[in-house]
Image (tube, rainbow, N blue to C red):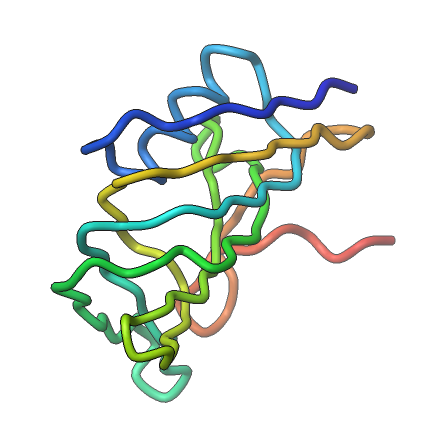
Length: 134
């Protein structure tokens, strides 16, 4: 199992960069963590009633206080699933599922996990998920 620690170039979109990094390095099952800041972002809340993500546009520079998630496979390609807590200048926070984050600075840690790859498949409620263990 390998671990990676790297900085994402300014102006990059975080999820796209992580996905490309994972593909270049053959990472198909891993834990992901990051800190830094975004110039803008889109996070989301998933509505089970509507079976869709409700986007929340963040059009200001925010601190990426915490990003945590995983990498698994979706349609045979590495797919980062990441949730974030974002800090505003006044100390208030926003959080949710990360749809897009434009990097000012991002330091990322990826830790591969042993075992067979996990593949995201259609699941009830309009989401994709791994099979249940067992």
